[in-house]
Length: 189
Length: 43
Image (cartoon, rainbow over all chains, first blue to last red; front, side, top):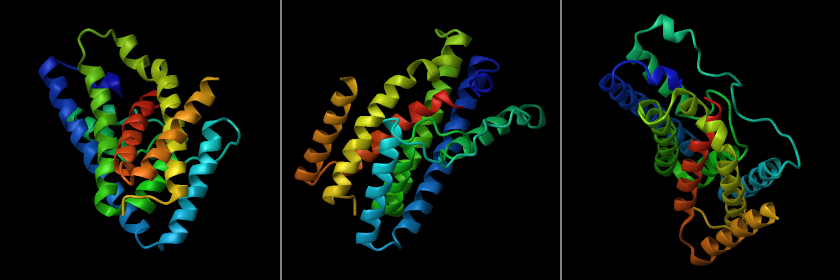
């Protein structure tokens, strides 16, 4: 995917990065707003208990205590799109597929309590903002790596794998913080 | 030891947010950014 974004002249890479970010941010925001709207229908005490349960269960998965299913397709973005569609359409479709976070593989179990919090504690506006941010940052980081001239191709592609321990460590602390807050009962609404 | 530190930091942050009744939205946005960077490991 980073290889696709990094194709062509510098100007074309920047344009592709913008298109990719826009698609990812928009689909993330739309998915988050839908989740928030659906979650708003769940009554408050039940939502809090459900969210605490999800945060505890997937927090245990983050700590390596249990193994639970993840909301993911388990696939990478389809490579065949690169040969079937024009370059800008491909980066748009890749962005649209990555924005909601469940179109490919979920890298960290902390993503599930995050989705739960967006759905059950955020409401549609905050849901759109939170998952829109996720989509935008995810695509923006990939686009920044792809358009970086100081990074060699191997470094661009392996950045995620080289830094995953840092993000997983942060995600553990954030997951515990989320669990504590939900248990005590403070949310966005 | 590192794990204990992470869990302790998370618990303290959660307690602080709950006590101040402020910062839950910021916590979720921070999680969004962290998960976005973590997702770079599985494109």
